Length: 389
Ligand SMILES: NC(=O)c1ccc[n+]([C@@H]2O[C@H](COP(=O)([O-])OP(=O)(O)OC[C@H]3O[C@@H](n4cnc5c(N)ncnc54)[C@H](O)[C@@H]3O)[C@@H](O)[C@H]2O)c1
Image (cartoon, rainbow, N blue to C red):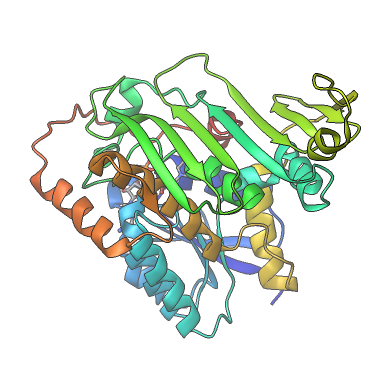
């Protein structure tokens, strides 16, 4: 195969942005041969691009080798399984699914197919040089043992208009959560990619604290790890300008990731060694101030799509394998369950119980959400902008 025949299902904000990227030649080795949405949401048709209003017809049309699922997350499980069973390569928008049960069902379907096709997820922030550099420092053991992590990512500000735009957004039934399911899959994915999975999660959440919605738009999470390190993760869609500051405290000092720079107050001697060896009660190791300038935010959505295509055509290693998408969903689910029950959740969590409670919340909800009929107008640039954190 020289060119991957590509189909996109869901041509709302994200699907249109991906379509624009392909049409504008930003991804190599791919031809957009099919798109699918409701008739009223389909774009003006182009030569060589077949249009469908029924996803089964697109999947079984023989016109595509790969599918990119850009529909609201509650449909990811069903559509993803159909695509995998039809033998298509699959790129799934984040989050992989609404809950851990659905993620596992997708992974099981992928395994049943013998893992012969490429199954990736759109965790575009893995291409960001801020986090790639930090990962290199962690994996090479430069930082030594990590003791504590604080990540405040409160610059996901969204307006009432945003929440009113899609009827499915920010409801238990339509979306299955709020900021933890919609914006933060990126950050929670990076969290587990960089630091691994904790063994305990406690969530303190604000439901509709800033917006007229029933789900969480404010979250403070506490993670405890098996090796004793602990972490806080704070997020909100109601604060502006907000911050995005990631602090890693390790044996080798304090490292802070902020926009355009990584600052590292580097201990010359690891703190535990210094503590054991020092003959003074109040001294501290000497520190060097290390500044690592970071340029730009990486290739983001385009890089992930190119990597997906390269993986299909040339076997390139995936930047974000879809099977890893279960972890960010589990962190979000555990935080929600913790807040609902007022308790700490041990991981791996009991996913069936969570799914049942979530279904009940959707079923019993009487919340009337404000709605507007907004046509998708965002461009790829809007998305690059809104996801630059
Ligand atoms: N990676 C990122 O940075 C990023 C950014 C935004 C959204 N997303 C993800 O993309 C997905 C879609 O979000 P959005 O903001 O584009 O939503 P949206 O509401 O703007 O668009 C969703 C589209 O899917 C269509 N659709 C729904 N069910 C369908 C079906 N069964 N068959 C065909 N079409 C169907 C709808 O008609 C709509 O046009 C979500 O999972 C979201 O989390 C990812």
